[in-house]
Image (cartoon, rainbow, N blue to C red; front, side):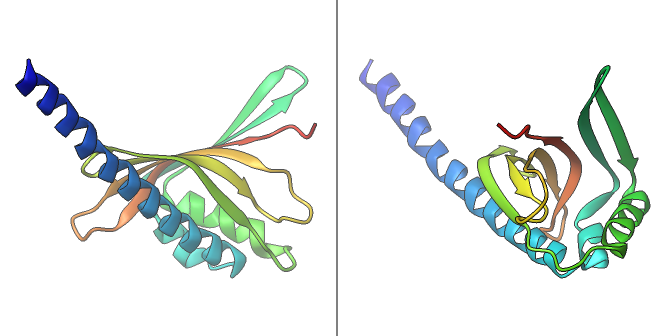
Length: 150
């Protein structure tokens, strides 16, 4: 019984650094992403996605919900190019609410994103990232959902 309790305690303690590591990784990645977004650095943003990445934008419509999907790094590059073509200065903010290493090379991040703090709605997001052989964390899937203003 004592050995089972010690094993359980050891397992519980062993998971704490993984959660802290995930949070630290997520914060660093999202700070880098926000910096690239603020600088309108399309190349850096596009290169933070896997070749076959998917962005899904979900919005509310009269009929329920609409979903717009961008598939592949080149489509995502075009999305950012179009987004910044008429944008004035940008001051975005990411907040990590949840980060979890699902496996050694799989990171799940949830939080909020304010594309432009002064005028844009806040978006809830969920990112799934995979780590490449060189240690780079690339976005595989990003889902963005506007948070209705109260």
